[in-house]
Image 1 (spheres, rainbow, N blue to C red):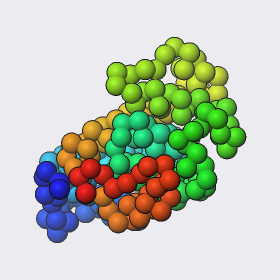
Image 2: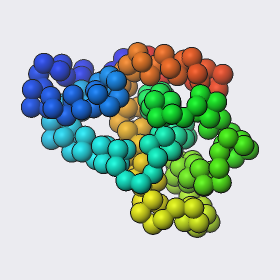
Image 3: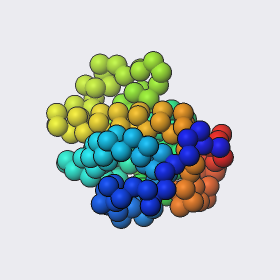
Image 4: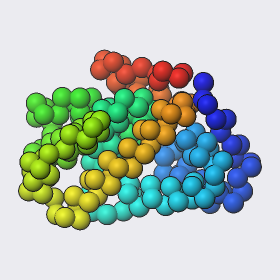
Amino acid sequence: MTHIIPKQREELSELEPMLKMVEASMGFLPTSMLTMAHWPELTQAFGGLGATVLHSGELDAGLKQIIAFAVSNVAGCRYCQAHTANSAQKNSVSSEKIKAVFEFESSALFSDQEKAALRVAVHAGMVPNAVEAEHMSDLSRYFSEKQVIEVVAVISLFGFLNRWNDTMATTLESAPKNFAANQLASHGWAAGKHE
């Protein structure tokens, strides 16, 4: 059960333009944003950061989502795992490839470039952070400096979200929950500890 009751959308008229944009992008309104809305300035700032990190820049949106999925797997955030797997699929990443993120190092579905990004994501998601110079050097072989910044920005955004949603026991919405239950159960995904 969630620790903080999310705000009702009707209470958030000042946030409605941003909420509509998020809903149009994701197909639903994330419960996490409605909880965050207890502090509207945080919601506005986070909305802008999330839009910048996930919807601008040079990297493919599908790659950003599998990076987010990988770091969320390491953090153990079921809410973010479901969201990012669902979003990866919406950004043309195949179900087979989403499932293979768990074994990306040995999967032929991933290019060397994608493996370098996922390797950094996995090691960055560990506590303490386990990224080593060789991981970043390998990343720089495949990505420009700006693209490396984008990779690390996605990882960092989900570092915030992983901690936010696990700490708040955010209730998972039905669309990502159903996607994850159908697509990731063979890898041990189950509704979060708070469901």
